[in-house]
Length: 140
Ligand code: RB5
Image 1 (tube, rainbow, N blue to C red):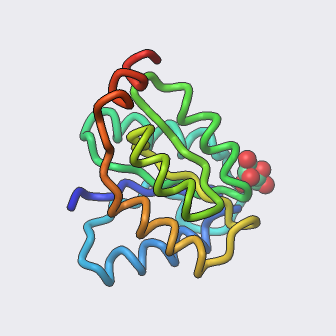
Image 2: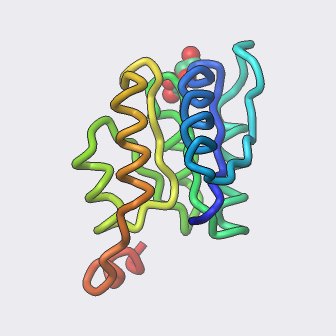
């Protein structure tokens, strides 16, 4: 299992900590790129750090903000990043199978902890199908 590079702004801080606890309980290595308190901060800075680290290491990333949208907008500016904003488990599964998603984005103000952890589990355990989907992701 790869290491997970994780980050949040203040709007996603609590959910990020729940995810870190959950991943560690499964012996998954986690690197936290901040933020480190609920004090207001700028989500683009965190999204940039995680996106750049994912490109460098090929590990998977998880980004959490209030909605998950700001994080996904910033991360997807990077070529090679396929950041998927998920609010349900079907999308989490499909975005791994068809898009080879390498960053999962979640919204603390949208998705409750129980569902968010299920989304994380499914996103982590689902493999990319390759084939025609590889051709398609190579088009952008
Ligand atoms: C912070 O208030 C909020 O704007 C941020 O967490 C995120 O939802 C942005 O997309």
